[in-house]
Length: 502
Image 1 (cartoon, rainbow, N blue to C red):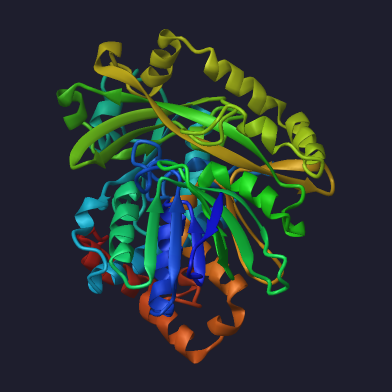
Image 2: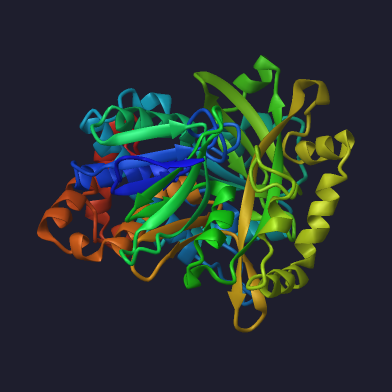
């Protein structure tokens, strides 16, 4: 039997990941009296996509990720996405610096550290590509300070482990950006929820699943949510004027249940992943960088190979991968029925069309799923020629759901970024998609707030608060080098990060 909660929160956040935490922090700063309920089906925050073992951990700033700068048919380098992502990450750092400055978060070294971001390629064509990429990015202030080299000695000083045992005749090139970061988004998320949980009017409900949602039917535009306490089995109803669904792979099903026309045609394609984790401390000590290479043809962005220094639970780790795979689950702790039950009349067309136009991805995933231990070692040896399999163990990474949406030309297309969907009245917002999500969560949530609370955003009070939290708010950093230097300097000071001047 269902019972109704006796009070009505102003906001309900579904999912206790980095997106809900970021939105919750924003709303509590902008509206201190706001009442927020947060529902999470697992028993802890950030246990799915935001968890350190499930997330790449790279502060995605486009310094080293080659998939953000594709080579165009005319031989030029596309830089639009790289510049946008680099700017968004600077916005994230500003907000995190504000949280530290205001004591919302303490010990920033627990979630963010300086780790150089590097790109590494081999073969004459790839060397030429990386050189063109470097030259193209040097036009933008965001990428000033990046170094490029084809000299073996220089590259060896940057990434000695990668150069051990490498063929001296092999053409190679690398770039190095020393202000790159490693971010433990799980730790950051838990820090934000720890502060939110102490605030008046904020309630966190772990082990609670939102099973359905729809308009209340009372003509007041509010949402009625059906919620189940997974420990006791008790079910209840909740009413609220605003809902954010930030449940990772679980968002699509709830969007479908909400029934808003803006959600028609959206589908999801799940991609799983695995890491090779180094267990040899001597090997781990030899590498201190995030080194990204070029993805295989047809590979999704989350599968761009990298040899990656991480700090997880206070311990230095070394990972390689991720190796992609396929599962019909939308969440690591999800159900194998997630994919089939997400197929509806309004999205089956776009999903079939996207599948037809992405046969290379299907082929790539089949190859990845059928890999042997020897195959994985061969892939690792491209980056670490002297690698030994006994130094590495296979670990499961996170589950991602890539967005499928309608497309006028192709019928449906597969998107590799994030997608914010909101109802026309702004009472419901949903986040779908994956990379570079966590790193750009602040900009994504700012966009969401501007869509859903336009009148309040326009007020002098909110405008002033936005500029307090994010000093560059409303100004393109890439077009204002002095402002970029100013906000970077402050962020680096508050977060304890390396600067270009160091």
